Image (tube, rainbow, N blue to C red):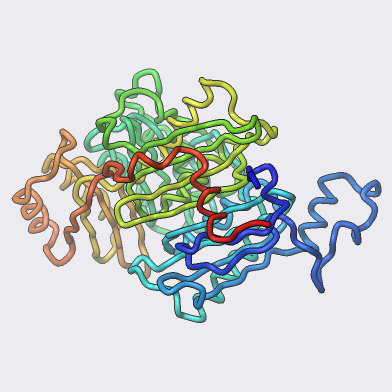
Length: 478
């Protein structure tokens, strides 16, 4: 029998034997169970509008999570069943990513009104998850988060106050010393950076910074002071920005997941356009193919790294595409992802211009978080102006920060910087040792990082059908 994604929901199937996962039954068709309500048992639909009806059905059928440590020898298997809605896949992947779990393999199906995914995950140290309290917490987080949609894309970039800290979002042209100048401005304005994340890609830079008032250790609420911060930071980030100047607009929108917000900021800044620094052979390989006018098949090959699946799913979701079927398989040197998608309007990607745009955006999503150059880890007592002092030292030694993660907990600063020299090349060891002596050898540690590699998968595999040829070969269908 010939199979295609259109009739996947009509059959029972199993996962590939290489997944080490027990068979999954009735893809997309979940019978009502004791304690849940089927659609037939709900109030008559003509008594409520479609939105209320959908919310009631989801509330009566909460997500179900099954975690199995016996189904695989080398990973923990997590199966998630829930009513399908736009954004469910991203919500689940976001929970796994936030808990620093690595998705080694995944099988995704969300046709027929029901979402059923299986994830094979491990700790970042490569081991299964054995802590029962952590397993219970994972289950609770997924069941809670998968019931509600994450806030959609926002286009504004600016300063948003909250109770604990003020969130500052920046976007502009990247240049050496940019983070040093930004942190110096905040220090001069008596602001302390407690958490931050900075990405650079394709000559663009984006940052989400959580800052507090030095004297109160809480959010900055004075409108005049916030206006001053916005004005001065706009001057710093907007220097030499050309036609795409920095955006600094006040916003009252609710908070959004920080890493998702960085993707949104860079997407809105169109970092996927223009000059690409890396040679084509070292970049991720993304291809799109339409099948039977029903789906667009997206295949991606790239070097594996943490949070890769989140970055891809986040970008597809914010571009208003829905993943109906998919698989993820990672090896030590390469990750392979294949998704069957449609736009939210129900149509595949038919325009060549839109296909090219999706390819560019997915390549950018994969590359933004790629660790280049040298990784420097700072561990020190937190103090006002610490970030300004550290980044100034980097700038004075001709280092460029390509990515950074700043965090503070219980009075300790735990920062990670990815640096190159001003030409984008590797940093000389004598410069690194000089910086370590200036900052403190015990405070600043060095960890080598690899750059995005080329694909090693053989060319005999096609760019479509990889998913179907694998998920059905282990179990014949009658």
